Image 1 (spheres, rainbow, N blue to C red):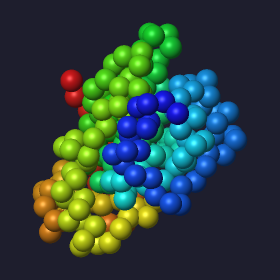
Image 2: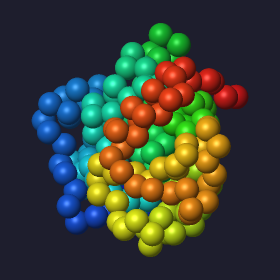
Image 3: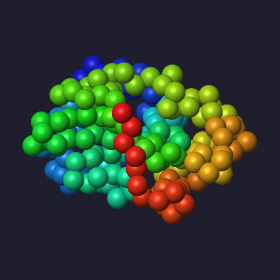
Image 4: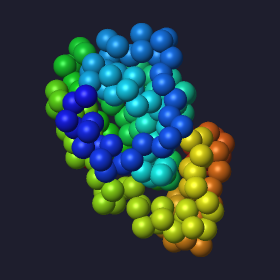
Length: 194
């Protein structure tokens, strides 16, 4: 396994109930994603890492979430508060990038644009990244309990409608239900941040 994945699992311990990728998932992504990532999926699997602070996901499960462009985006990882980290590849432009789909404020931002962006992303993943909201995650776990693989923490009311990043606004629930509620309340348009 590549060193950057060893570094990742050193910072985000894998849960004991990870799910190995199906053969159809491997076939679907083997010509899109780096072999190192596919190998990581096969060795570890999809599920909660770091007690649910992040989730390594089967991209096909998340490809219909509002804001994902199925033509060029591959969802890779979900933070405990539902933000989706995506890999974008546009072969015609020789573009490869890692970005985040901020589901709370309806924006998309690419922060690593490079041939080796997946390697750089996993190598740089750290529990101190502000977007992961580690302290709020710890408080949310105390308040609401551990997250299952299909659950996220969310804010009620939603951040874009006046909620705040404070434990009093944190609840937990099914990720896809929350994505649908946000799409219904806030619309399907995502703004590009630079």
